[in-house]
Image (cartoon, rainbow, N blue to C red; front, side, top):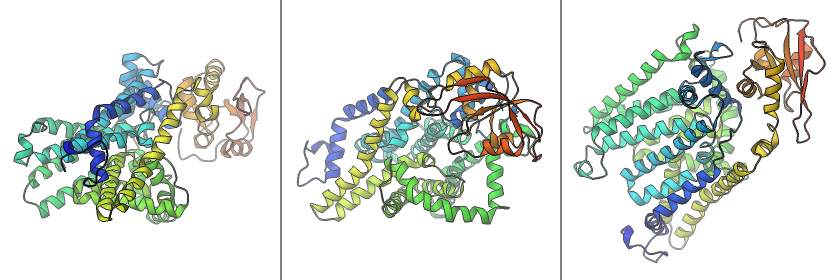
Length: 533
């Protein structure tokens, strides 16, 4: 039934899914505007403090100040360079003493990502589906959250979507009807979008290898099974390989003299060769149960669904629906499959790693719901469709508005993570005034990178400090250790570290012991001498 003929209420002739599409198409500006307003309501210009974003910000600030791609005066081999260089540009334009411009840039990246997703669905399935899927993905808690986190997850998603938009546009050029449509972009525009998106994805995260693997297999499939478009896919494959080669040729992480790859790549090669059996054991014994029992539902629905068996069943449906997109577009299903495979084999997988394919998972879930609705007799089909739709939408909406509330509560740091960082600025001020640069300071777990950025001092955590080849005659220690930390206490005991009386005291608040800063000397130096700071 044509969309324009659908009524404001479901009828006996129209499926509930068709009615919903018509509703979103008819009131598209209201739905899209309401979504944009919710994003703007959550914007507060405040940094959501956490270690990864602190690392990117510190390297970006060092680039802006002419210190190169460094962290603690050493070339950093861990952080992919895309986000640090973006922050370097922001710091050059707006100065290094404010973070609200970076927050604005990340929110803009969120809007661009949703716009690219709209464009991809629009040329693939029409305007009504594009509006509905944009709202469905935009109001997914995982996507919403990372529009306000200064991490590389959302820029990576933007790169992936730009590549898919360009790829779909080039694919459509082979259809004479689509080529003459007003919606069609010229070949050169699609090509620029594709190359730009791939370049952004490659410099943002090591998960770009999942995209490259999907592109390679799609090209092989096209060459072996299709005549039409095979040369175009080969060109895209060669472009993809060329961009990856160029990235590693100019990768700033390589100039430390430790090899031809960054730390992530070296670890990946080692996992696939020297540590193959331990890697498989980790994937099977630990990562797979965690992945299916919590990570997939956390990413897709914003929360666990309760019993582990229910989470596992729903996770299999979510991932199966995503991989099944291979029937529509082999590249999409392969991208989901490769991303899942990478997540399962890496240490400590996180739900946010699925953000790169979450729009595809949402689209796969929608297609699965429609099939269920059409397979079952009425009213059971409509009922099943409504339950499945509510399962995706309602938990996510609850989490989205919970985050909006958290973002609007002031003072922000008094409520963020239960006030853990309320007085961290005062601690950073104490470090700047009492600790000469570059004397190291040993900090509690998960505080090293954050305090490094805020204090402009060399703040390390106990595990990192224990690998120093040589310790200075005097250094500093921040107490107490984190509640779940053993490293700092063990370091002090193992090396006979003597602490001075407190040089500075800063309140933590929320029934936590005060932070205290101490000068320290060690009776015994480090026993491990195979790695530097």
